[in-house]
Amino acid sequence: MTIPYGKQTISEADIQAVVSVLQSDFLTQGSRVPAFEQALADYCGAQHAVAVCNATAALHLACLALGLGPGDLVWTTPTTFVASANCALYCGADVDFVDIDPQTWNMSPDALAEKLARAKAAGRLPKVLVAVHLCGEPCDMAAIKRLSDEYGVAVIEDASHAVGARYRGGAVGGGQYSDITVFSFHPVKIITTGEGGMCLTNRADLAHKIALLRSHGITRNADEMEGGSDGAWYYQQIDLGFNYRMTEMQAALGLSQLQRLDEFVARRHVLAAQYDELLADLPVGLPFRHPDNRSALHLYPVLVPVQHRNRIFNALRANGIGVNVHYIPVHTQPYYRKRFGFAEGDFPNAERYYAQAVSLPMYFSLSDEEQRFVADALRQALQEAAA
Ligand SMILES: *Cc1c(COP(=O)(O)O)cnc(C)c1O
Image (cartoon, rainbow, N blue to C red; front, side):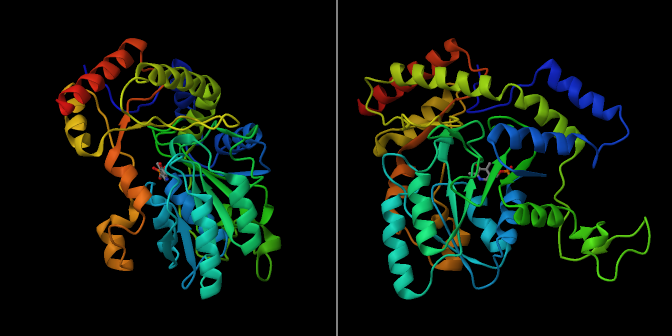
């Protein structure tokens, strides 16, 4: 038996949606991408959505749209995938981190408040904050918004784990607490397009800039051109953009998957509640869920005794269980150490979390039986490690 930590669920309807695109005239730049954008904007209650080729590109364009450039600074959490920080470096900006809260595993609002006060005194405030909803559990966005308003910092929500999540009753992506929200549709995430990402925003200017940069910085709108249009064939490059477009096949798959988003998240909640119960008597820390939120439950990490983590991890892998570790603190990556001088001990809560974390399998089609097998294997590994 091999059980991965995460995987996609593809239905016959998903397959038909992609096949029908392949049988149509447009594999790119047709009607499916705008339809997927509109459907996800509607789902989240956002004004604008711009689909791109992956969430890394979405983060890059979000930073550029917010005017990030050389000399600027971005802060994010160390407990994330490297893409949450790399987006700043693509723009020539620098990166620093705010340590996590040991209970929620998300960026600590207290640590953020302290660091902002110090940064203001030192005259080196960040231009953009990237808040990451780890495991799909929303950050304390009310606190983050209060602080970002006070200090004049833009906020990007890296909601790669959190499509389908709700914060205080509103869908993540609705944009009440941030400038731009980014989703990922990588196959391990909640819904998939193979590769894919989306930027959501309530600001027309940001949506327009992101859409422009997604396609080379080229416009076909005569009102935006210098000197007007030469004819129906004409376009002008008015900015330096990229080819970060999503294909029609990807958007068709995303639209089809979106129909089942709530079903996917609901099953993850059943599984999480069952894990909570199966593991209740074990010496492990379980993922935090705030009662006022709905996590998308992308991941279900447990915290095991630090001295036994590797042994437990290896025992689970030896049982055919594809456990993983999310995440190695970004500031400890060699590239970040060398470039910025970060060292072990800089963000102790993120480092302590990392040393204990093991992500258990969590995905829609994980069966109750497979889940009990995982829980039993973890119980046994803990006992053997402690013996
Ligand atoms: C998956 C992920 C990304 C990158 O998503 P891609 O679509 O693979 O580019 C960024 N941030 C976080 C937190 C992620 O988990």
